[in-house]
Length: 87
Image: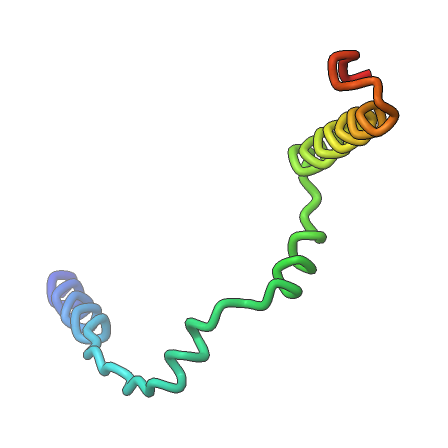
């Protein structure tokens, strides 16, 4: 009796687990829309939402180099030259 239930359950499991693959028809317009790259504005807006410590560190490093380059440009503009160092 119990072996009949086991065999019957295995048959039911095997039959219900089978599926047939039916490929969806692809249209070139749908492919073009799906593969279109996002605009730079959308990428910029999404990038601003990132809250990660490494991003904050990279931004601070960028500001440090920006300040150093502005100091260097001011020294060159004033005629003192670049040999006076960064600060």
